[in-house]
Image 1 (tube, helix red, strand yellow):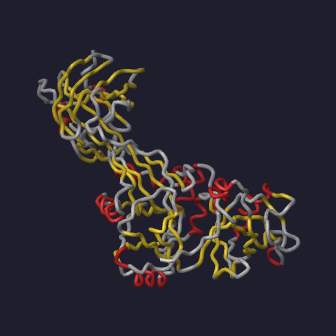
Image 2 (cartoon, rainbow, N blue to C red):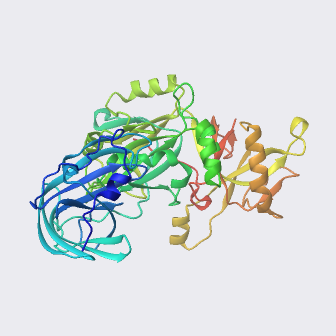
Image 3 (spheres, rainbow, N blue to C red):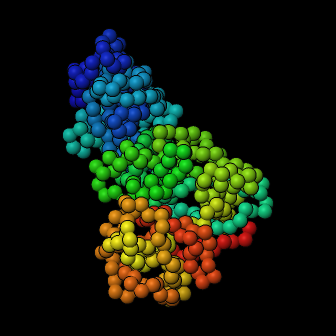
Length: 489
């Protein structure tokens, strides 16, 4: 028999400090009510409570109650709660057991089919929770909860596990201005956010899990609560003037330990700029027009300490470009209002209108420094592939790395130290470049690392004019780096 004793519940709480009910004076009875509390404690979880034998039998469910019979979830059996807790919602103060916000996610009645010490089977009748469920003990206080009925929504789609971001082409402002929505181009790291059961998984555009690098973003999934969503956006480091600074973000991108991340996040906090929604509550939204995806995204009202959804503007592209240039921003993205989301594709439906020329380039070596940089890196040797990795595979021929010139400015002292550490193990004897040769005295490396470079223009010979180093990028594979070609619009 499951215990109804409330001594354990009362022993954990100071009722002078917490607004939770003590249970003294609760009426006896068996009306078989239930409540599900959404509990924003140290970690978000859901508390399922069943009225039974004068108390509320309770289970903490870390990832929420499953909607699909294919998904069993952990349910930790906790101490019984008093009947009056069924109506409780509020803030449990810091320092108290279970500190955090408690709100009622759903409530209603249930039919009891079985109530044993190791197994409970009930049918719920609530607004959000309905259907037949089994709770069964696995070991000690660890139980599982399983939906026995078919899913309420037979057309529900599982959350996609991997989405390669859609990319923009470089080009001028589109002629049919009113057919486009305009967004600021944020200078950061592209990231897809998978939010489910209050848990966040963050992936870079080359499918690397980067969740651990940005702990302050985990609360985004907790804010969504029981809702499941896949979001597209950019992780940025904002400077004192409110502008994204890719150089500042470098200090967060290369850290290897959790302790180093925690220390650095105090000095260089990040903000996740959310600009698209790809999945929401059992439905992919990628086939919807951009305008509709943005409407649904804005309804989520995502505005928190480390994330936000900036507005987009329909039409008036020239004015928005001028405003972005005046603020020293990288540029603007023009997106066709009727365009669908095309994962992994560089689509002409999205146009990158740049204020400054920027290009990802492969590092093929370096030139030794002189003067104040003697004994250090003087300039990086940069290049790009003649064709993409996908085209090379389709054509059955290898890629060629073409020389784009040397990059000798834009480095901070930290950049030079970091580059020396990561390039030295990649040394090789022969040049990786297939066409023009770099100056004498160059040191060569395996072409595996990617740098972001700003420059004024390309020369006729295919070299960068006035290039400046902006930072390393580990969110793009070197084999995918080709020269960006503007498209007509």
